[in-house]
Length: 100
Length: 518
Image 1 (cartoon, chains in turn red, cyan):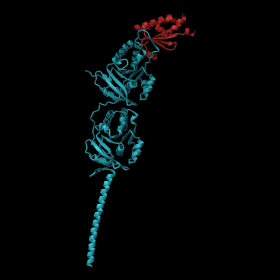
Image 2 (cartoon, rainbow over the protein chains, first blue to last red):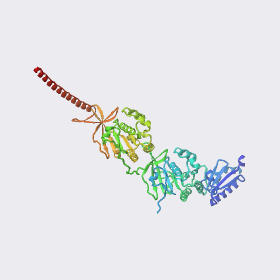
Image 3 (cartoon, helix red, strand yellow):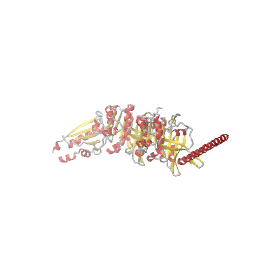
């Protein structure tokens, strides 16, 4: 059951406080609270402030959510409005099923 | 009105066609099929920008990884690592993998913009290349967003006042697969890689250049260790310098036919003839003469190897080896089918530029037809002859003619200044060579047919015998000569005999007289 203890390191790339970015962050917080309570870290990176970080994670689209841990790295782009897709993208679904 | 300002690419020949380069501060689309040289084109534009025009550049690659790109262009002498270390060039690899990315909801490509801006600002770039931006279509599914963002990107590039190149893969029936030409409308250049008769030729065409005149033809171009070279055919002008200095042909009797002095310096001479008529020997004599006068000669052999030519020429009393050792003579042997015509042309250009000869021999040009159509060969020769004459270099071409097809000759003959024709004549069981001058612009030349002899002491022309039975050559001429000689000898003897008899007769009569007296 090592999987349960695992922390999910998530990184959200945004560019300024745009509506899309804020929506994405809200959505992400909501999903994480529901499905990964106490098991996640969210780091928000504003590329307007730190443009040099865009290259490292190969960021093209804004907003982009990157799952750094657990590996492999997954990326979800968009305002994360579709919960189903985000969960599948982050591979969280099985966790929820386990919890149920 | 301010004329459109242009940014020079530094690519050989392209700036001539576009009359100054690509539009400054605008985006140019380079499209073409796979392997046509788009990436290289972009890279050369950037590297030249740095090395020749002091303009830093950003290369955004959507296809190859940075390391791969560095390796690929290293063969062309581009040291990207050094340029990157000097902060004059920046290569940014944008990687998109459909499998890693999930799309949900609205997004934009601000990330790309930010990266690009960061890259541009970090080195103060004036030039940007996006290679191949269409790969985004493979990685992202929402085409609506993508198209809107691309439109915004091209606007943004204009605002940034960078001169940009965007490459695009050619699609079926359209210039690019995803219609990039809709967004980039200032300048469009199409690269093409065609294979005709198993020989590939690259061609370039400026399809569109808003606000500027440009060459509209298809121009052949090549990629070699010096990068891209575009060869503008139509920029040829007939205003080269002419020389009235004369140079010997290396065959005194042939010189005599050319008004006693030989060819003009910087003229083009064609030696045509059927197989085995001694074209190479004439060429070698000429080269030998040039070298004897301590001038440099360059020999392009498309049929024989240099060693073979040297050995063969020894048999006619020409020793080319010392010239070779002294560095006065240089051979360049290559099979015509080795590469395309344009490549041959460029090799010739380059060798000539390096070696700076005063005479060049191409032996034989007819072999080149095997790699191109006669019209293409003609246009190549036209460019070559023009170039050489512009430099004041004399050029001797040999051409193999068959009895049937003389078309090639006709095409080339209008380009050359002098034309020597060698023919075989067969009669009474032997083959003899006849030589005559078909034309020689601007000088008095012999209109006579001479018999052309290849002897162990070199080449020789002798007057043919015109007898009551027509032209007599070879053994017939010898026979005639002998007959004449014997005739003369007989006559002489007759005369001598007569004289002796008369004298004797006189003596005898005198003797008889004295005898009688005594």
